Length: 443
Image 1 (spheres, one colour):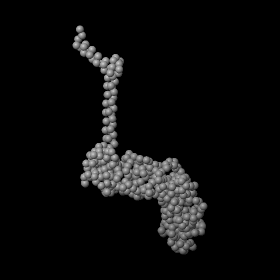
Image 2 (image 1 turned 135 degrees about the horizontal axis):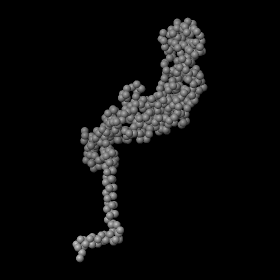
Image 3 (image 1 turned 90 degrees about the horizontal axis):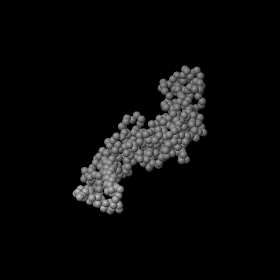
Image 4 (image 1 turned 180 degrees about the vertical axis):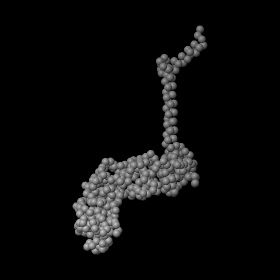
């Protein structure tokens, strides 16, 4: 006679067959149909847990988290429309902000976070007047996207006319340092000799005379952009000085007149002044001949050694002119000068830029998309670090001065160090409004 346990097993077996027939249409399957459902349910639970964890991590690292409508430390974003607000405890109101940067300047966090708030929560707080700085950037480069590379300005005539390109954080590739001089004329009509990493302006009224005197007559200056010329470190003008008592008899050099050029052997030259002679370089002697329409230097032979030296002891020429007359190179395809002023290269290649906004002093600007630069304007190479205005340069090719360095943390750049860039290079870009919390608080 069957036991109660046998009867229970028989009953369970019968129920199992009925369930199998209902689920899989087979009363005697090889594997229980409920086993597959259990595995599926377990996998579903794991996927759900991973999804919840993923959303939590996204909210944590993105900073775009839920917040109260009265959180003064954050820029608040309305969940459905994306409208941005800041809460000001001073008046207990929510204020719409014109742009993201204005929100960062008004919120009290360091840096403020971007937090989402449902519309019904925002509706519980009184609404204030819109605040912000018109035309401040609506997107800022992340701290890790700030460019620290060198700046350069280049010139070329590939478009049929001289054009300038400002490179931010990208160095020109290839090219060579010029071994001869470049005679250039910029878009402002100025003529310069570029030699030895410096530029020497030829006065407009004396361009023809100087070219003749230096043996460059008939050489057509290479057409360049004014922005590129201005970036080349300036030397003295390629001109002769004013000579007092010109053509009067010298009281110290018998038989000679002030302004005469003497030579011992055609290689060593001197200028006669009232109280003696001063040495001249070949370049200086030729400039004097061009400016004062002098005859050829007078060869005095051994007498040269006995001529009295001027009591002034120095030439009246400005220091820094080339000693000799440089040969001129053929016009290159392009030329680039680094912001440091110590690297001039010709025939380099560089990326094409984009046309900047109104107010730019260059034709094109290249800065990588999504990047930016935090820069300190250096008025001169000797200016102490930390003395210049700090500005933020965006990938739109515009710079925005900061009201103070204390705002770096507010904008998310507390660990960033501004790169020193000559103020002249920053001024090539169009200026945006100053980023100032006081200005941002105005409606």
